[in-house]
Length: 128
Image 1 (cartoon, helix red, strand yellow):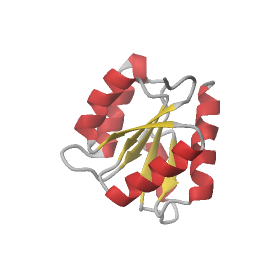
Image 2 (cartoon, rainbow, N blue to C red):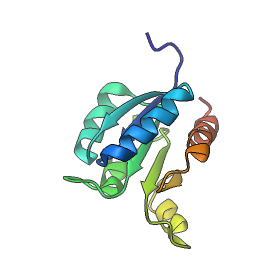
Image 3 (cartoon, helix red, strand yellow):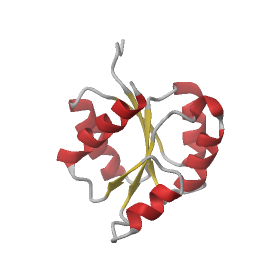
Image 4 (tube, rainbow, N blue to C red):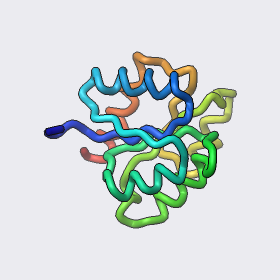
């Protein structure tokens, strides 16, 4: 049914951000699946096997940094790029986030022109 469309797992608790990201990525040919918190993300990764994960940092139940570290700690998931979605766009913040183990960074408010480009870029690095 989905063919070869890259699967994006969006881990985000803000409704408007979910709608925006889903619409933009769907228009660019991605299949978007969602999780509302870190705990749901762990289950989704195991069952859905996404090609890339967009992870909000501030989530209920389990934050995005903890969820990313658990996902990355499993060898079968270590090759899945995990991009941080965050409103922490201060100078130097991107480097701090990348140093925590994220593969990339998407600042909020989300730049719709750059969103699909950034996701594609990271999928290309993965060799997908």
